[in-house]
Image 1 (cartoon, rainbow, N blue to C red):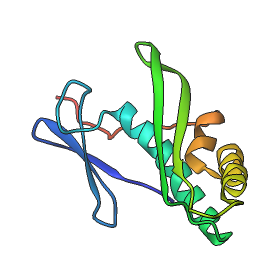
Image 2: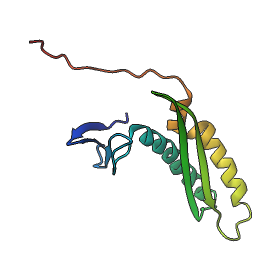
Image 3: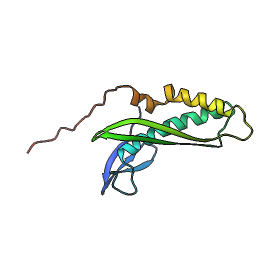
Image 4: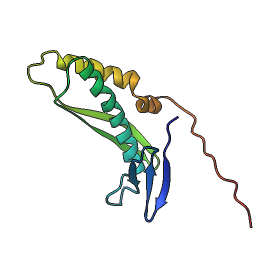
Amino acid sequence: MAGVNVERTGDVFEATNDRGARVAIGTAEQDGVFSPVELLLAALGGCELVTVEPLTAKRGHRLARLSATVRADKIATSRLGDITITYDVELPEGDEKAAEVFAKVAGRVHESYCTVGNALKEPMKVEQVLPELAAD
């Protein structure tokens, strides 16, 4: 099971995982923090890249550079439109098959192997558990 803890720390929130990683969360107007939507986009881009990179390298085509820009327009107060992932890739010099391998791997990752992408494509249940609070 995957999980994180999110807690208010002063004027922002902080997400932590069991391995000690931390990320500051706030509103899109606050400096130095990620908004929740930006974290969602980062999770999708990160999921694709950390899956594409080892699969291309395993096939003998380690990319010289691999990055992606992930964007989505807000189409309503609490709704995103389509998400676009734009890859920026530098192929290894002299590797004539790297582009073909990258394209095939990236396509399979996007269609099937990225857990975050799959979660965004398929409806899923999101449950909220509230504590029992004593009424005064």
